[in-house]
Length: 46
Image (cartoon, rainbow, N blue to C red; front, side):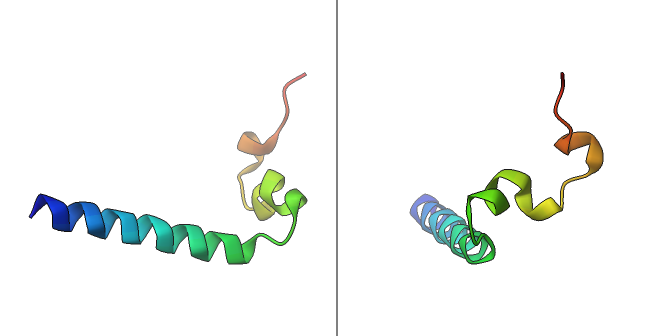
């Protein structure tokens, strides 16, 4: 049973990674998270 959960977790993680990798086209998309972060999270502190 534990092995089943581990395998399910790994498949889910790989699936999310594959889905996310298709959305990122270049390093800028990766760094700015596709401009989908709230303004408070994406501001740089001085």
